[in-house]
Amino acid sequence: MSLEDAVARHVHDGDVVVIEGFTHLISFAAGHEIIRQRRRELTLCRLTPDLIYDQMIAAGCAKKLVFSWAGNPGVGSLHAFRRAVEGGTLELEEYSHFGMVARFSAGAARLPFWTLRDYAGTDLPKANPRIKSVTCPYTGEALATVPALNPDVTIIHAQRADAQGNAQIWGLLGVQKEAAFASTRVIVVIEELVDERVIRSDPNRTLIPAAIVTAVVVEPWGAHPSYAQGYYDRDNDFYVGWEKISRDKGELAHYLDECVYGVKSRAEYMQQQPRLMERLKAGEQRCVGVNYGF
Amino acid sequence: MMACVAARELADGEVVFVGIGLPNLACNLARRTHAPNLVLIYESGAVGATPSRLPVSIGDPALVTGSLMVCGMADVFQLFLQNGRIEVGFLGGAQVDRRGNINTTVIGDYKKPKVRLPGSGGAAEIAIHAQRILIVSKVSPRAFPERVDFLTSPGDRVAKVITDKGVLERDAQSGELVLASLYPGVEVKDVQVGWKLRSRAQLGRVEPPSSIELQLLREVLDPQRLYLGS
Image (cartoon, rainbow over all chains, first blue to last red):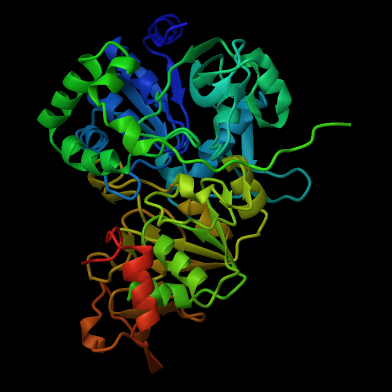
């Protein structure tokens, strides 16, 4: 299925949408497609909104943001996000990383909430009344709780999968497994389609099983300017450059016109930047083989 | 200077939760000098990382290559942090107050912020669970108010605050930050905060960076000056 079809079918106005990936494997291709299809009133959830949600907020897709750290890692601010918050046009629901991870864990296990030892002495529960507490029935200890997060749709970028959607990921794993299991629908976007035999040769590397996958999309370089371990490096220059683009509303609009609305697909986006592949292509660092025999 | 002082705070073999920015540089400097067995854990899931280049973000691919373990973030927060396995946690912040509390959320009112900052990330739980917290932050009356506008990370476990002028420590009895040592060429009056800062009876003098530390920082760890000033 094409990404255009997958978004058209499975991402609707008003949905709770998760595009996960902690620095690694963020599906910018899917975010751009959602922008192109002009989805509105979305509740966007991610630990780190990153540049992709900054772009989606700027494009008018978001009604609400559920998050735990909204910055440009190692660079500075997400300025479209800041403008929206400081101007009062974006609703926020804010946790810490552990709180967001716990919300996905509860959602994935189909529990109503998750307990964690956190937030004592902080102002976060005052800012977000959905952070509550419970008394442990065994020890009497007061523990923090966060509610389950069950998205309508979660979009995960993976290195490879078979046609059924058994998806394998290596490198940083973030909270993708929990987010996918918590979700009603799951779109898996992959660098490479492989035969089922390849998946079966290394089953420990499968993070997301086909049983929970709604759609599989092959989209090489679909995570750029994020990265895919073993395929291409993070485009740190782009992240640094985003500071200047996002600071200025006009420049940001120009970026969206040129690189998002101005192309039909990720393939066209890559054609627009012919030197990208050469600059970011990953080197070789193979692991030692594992014997699965018995 | 701040990176060197932060690096010297780390003992060989310690398990450190590494934050973004200067702490990243400090940990990698320590690993290449006096603490080769430092265990670097990043909230992104890399455990025992030995990055061959200075990671721009805490999710850099170089953290994965050659690390001892890569786990999901649920494991990082539950099995490492909440489990009590982290000895040292590094934090920074837009505001640090008299009691070592940190604000990385908003300047001004939460609902109508003057400046919206990134938020907690893992900072709230790092401050609660790491056995010892080191803060790295440039000192000024604005950045060090009597009380933070928003309390993101509690100061109870803060051991030291490494600033650009000297080092503050959290006094065990009063619970407030006091001046413990000064950098070369800095005097007590140069360290200005938003409350009446007390000094330790015996003020220490921090040794300037050694030629080895400087060479590592400038030529090996951060040749592009990502974190170091020019």
